[in-house]
Image 1 (cartoon, rainbow, N blue to C red):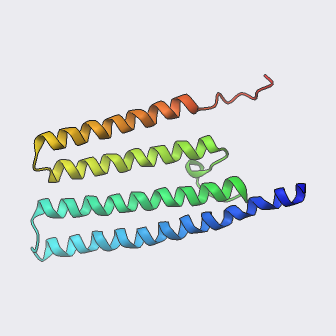
Image 2 (image 1 turned 120 degrees about the vertical axis):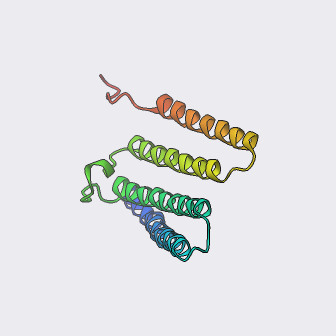
Image 3 (image 1 turned 90 degrees about the horizontal axis):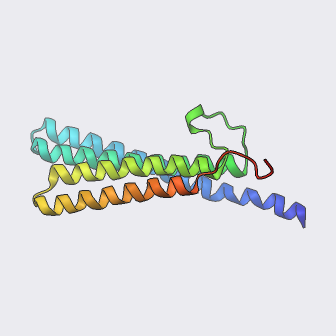
Length: 157
């Protein structure tokens, strides 16, 4: 029974691969959106403001791709192979590490989405309410991160 449970951790390879493939797909889409925005701007088919919104949407897509890549790397590193050769900032040794990295990327996505709303916003009150909501979400994520962080000490100390 113990051996079955030990081997069951390799099931996590499937969601890890799924997240990596999803991330690669979103990278291709984001790069396509970025290139498309640049071409439209050069051909003078769109105004600068519209191009800015398109570029921000592409950046948002690329940040979502980053989220999926971090999830894929993190799950694989946590459950399958801790000896992956990743940059130090991407190494994940605990669920707290993964949670922290994900929260950081999610906050960046929220900032980019809000910036897009700010640039595109036509109604000042709606933009302000959007910003208040985004700020509340960032504060909630910060509070969650603070409340659930581990002290770094083992329980027997």
